[in-house]
Image (tube, rainbow, N blue to C red):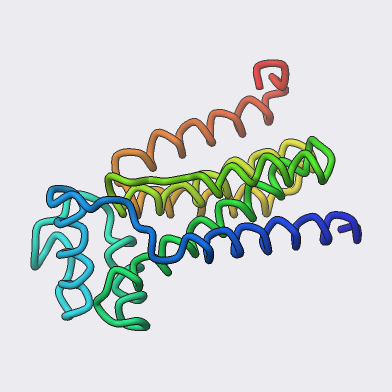
Length: 193
């Protein structure tokens, strides 16, 4: 890892944190449908309930646990929820920077990762949690394809398991696509990738 990469990555993280900090308290308008259901689920987990067993929850169990952690830290307030969302946005920008850095210069990766400053997943708090896992899985695949090092396959597998823990119906198809890419690589069909 070169010093220039660390400088640009640090600049990316600092800018994302600064802009998200300036937007502090500016949550999107809350809907009583999806967002109300999400907030209820996060609060129920904080109270010791288990998703799908003790209350209705059609997604994976990870995000209610994640946001219950933020409620535990900051109380059951929308600001606590925003802290959790901001941590996800920072993770997305960080992973996007390193994934793009495999192919483009640090300034280009910096500019592209800034897209997560304008990212606003305003209709549900659950689904946005899958995006850092998706980015990490894609990054792992790219690293494996460029280095042929097997540990990247393990990291990709864990990342797509994380996607399934957030949104059950999205994780398996992405994992299957990941496995097909690995199979094509192993069989020497790199031109299909």
